[in-house]
Length: 142
Length: 150
Image (tube, rainbow over the protein chains, first blue to last red):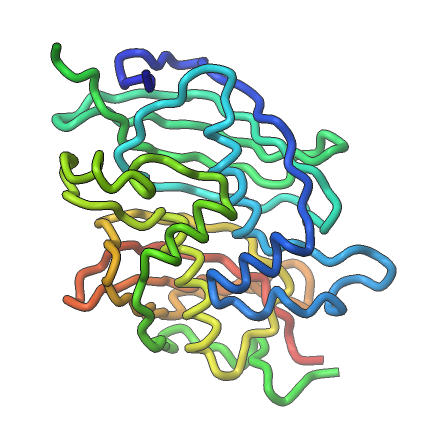
């Protein structure tokens, strides 16, 4: 059973498992997005592993958000997000996602849930911060 | 050293506009994106469930639309920006992208500002993702840090 709008409370949250970023992730991302700029693995800082595209971090955090210890919300749609890049992420880094419900507002078709998300690396440094507004389903009538 | 085929902060003007080629979103794109992201939400992966939803069928991940629009954007800007960093993004999802839809990206430079460092500036790019009917399905602003000419 997914969680519905009524089941979510401000302050609810969890931290996802980690995911290690690989060259294969970057290549797959470039293939799907068509963004070929990511494929120049020599472009970054000498002696350091290549930097992973910022949007790929966001993409992977969207999947990590479903790896919760409890049932995840029945999301009907993404509405808005605000994303801020803080630090570069490199191939070989392991990111986790910390998610917290920061607000909720009922609507006709469901309700809006505001989530704060922090993506952190293996040194516990925040690499990206985001605020998501999600449209979440109401519990269906019996 | 400045490279002739790149656009530096001085070369970019408020009001500059770009329109990308189109790209048709296929079922394969959605399946591949679910595999990469790990987002297997029923919205994108369960055709039977989605028949009963307000959309009537599976829809593309919002972030798939954003990722593809980033690829289309780099194809639209023939002389790439001398980008140092992608600073942030505010993005709105206004309508679904369905299998078979063809999207394009329209971009406009909406703001330029100098920073305390003389070797760089910040450019705001307004981006709209349009479908084959000309409807805006996603839109937002990206802030880029761009090198100045040396």
